[in-house]
Image 1 (cartoon, rainbow, N blue to C red):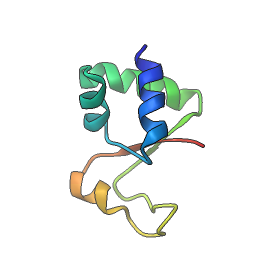
Image 2: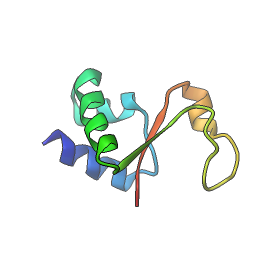
Image 3: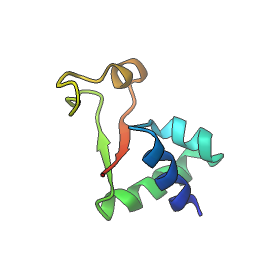
Image 4: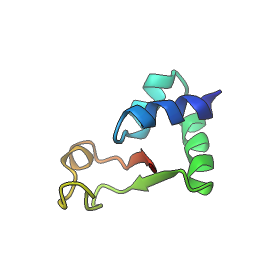
Length: 76
């Protein structure tokens, strides 16, 4: 169930932090992190660090730098 919730959430958002996903799904961050790792291992989710260059604006993402958390995005 959590895997499909994460897929749906990231499909409707360009990216999100672990905390945002956990808050939306109503699960503990550890559980969400394990589910995200499953999707990452399968190649469906990309984890971008806070210093990653944004694909759209070609600059460091301000959201990541503000939150100091990695961002997760669904590969389209």
